Image (cartoon, rainbow, N blue to C red; front, top):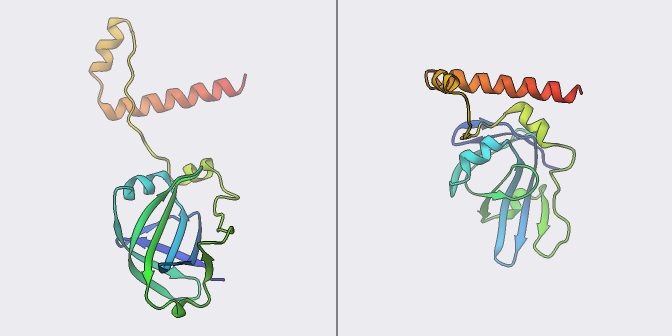
Length: 167
């Protein structure tokens, strides 16, 4: 079985939580495919891209450099599917093979949770709130910098969660 050691996309290393690399056989030919569980940040970064320059380092020392198509796989965890057409699948004889008619497919989601992924790389999302507050608090909020407000609200929410969980 072939094991992926590291992956670089456009020269940048990405954190891969779990993966499966294999040859996909279909009536139209062969593709080299790499399914990966990555962070939500990585999915967001590459979801609008069609092609990426990918370097895959295998545990046995081989390096695969290729321009690969990217697909975002829908599921419970953030996933990328990278693929490229193979002219000569014989070069990859030791890779697992998946046929389009097979019912078996690599399950890379097993054994990892979204919470574990977010401990490594937590995405930030913009949120807009509409509140009714006393005018003195509104005036104070308007005079604060965004960075300071972001930190303050993070701390307030985490403190509130802790308080709620200890009840």
